[in-house]
Amino acid sequence: MPKMTLQISPEMDAILEQLAAERDIPKSQVIRRAVLLLNYLDSDDKEVSVTERGSGKVSTVVFESQLGGTATKAI
Image (cartoon, rainbow, N blue to C red; front, side):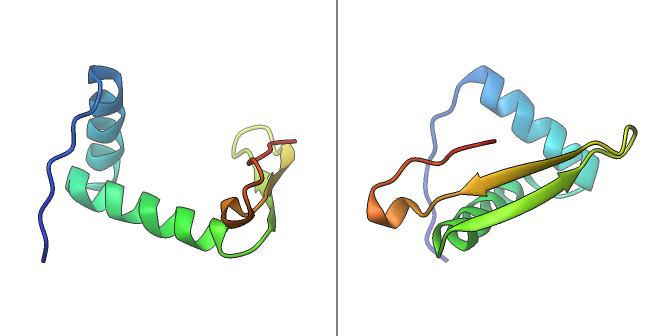
């Protein structure tokens, strides 16, 4: 498997540490999952509903494919 070096800010490293610890996975796996999610969202325009656990509030997030040069929007 190819290896790479990634320079990130201390804030980004703290987020990676937190996500990895919450899931009991390495930081590299967090990055792999993020890349796979971005690939999925970028494959075509998607509209995703997100429900907040505590409040039950539902938000809709629209992802427009970056492949055509459009920006990602959140509603």
